Length: 191
Image (tube, rainbow, N blue to C red; front, side, top):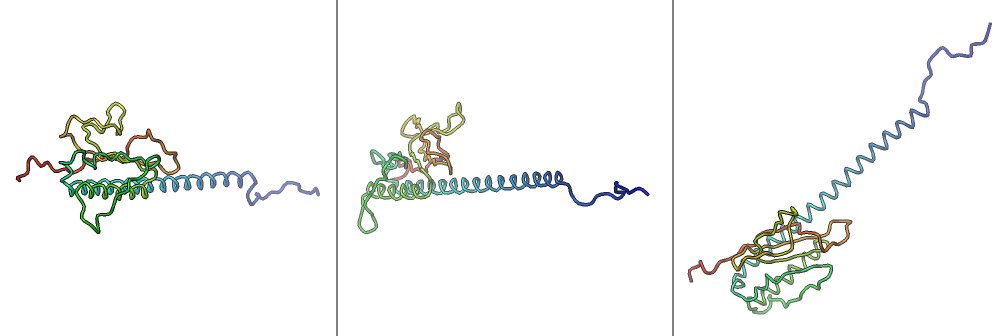
């Protein structure tokens, strides 16, 4: 009788090629999950920055409305805000909590406090407050830092920008937020 060199039953187990293919498929899946997780973290961070900027702009708008006498001040201290954290030194102002302040001194103190907080909460914060009839540039499809005011009755706009996490500061980047500030028109009020 001749020895049987061929096995009549099928092989069991995995070949090396099957193991390698399954590792490649598993690696691709893990890479996809990690990429989605990183994108989710970045999106959450940008949402937090946007929410912080929106709250800061709303707060400044309320301060401007609360210090309505500044509409009559020349120049209005709030309209002088043109701040860039990467190159400007934050203005300092005396506190008005322990003494009486004029409306201009109160506005200066509020502006200094506000700029300090946006510098602490938004990376490379930039802020501009100005009268602007066209904060949106339709040709470039983005907000602009430039202020195109047609006159005293143009809308007061608060513009904020910041640097995305992991990106280098770019002074040419457009604002990420622009909201109209509440204002009081004294000429329509009964005196």
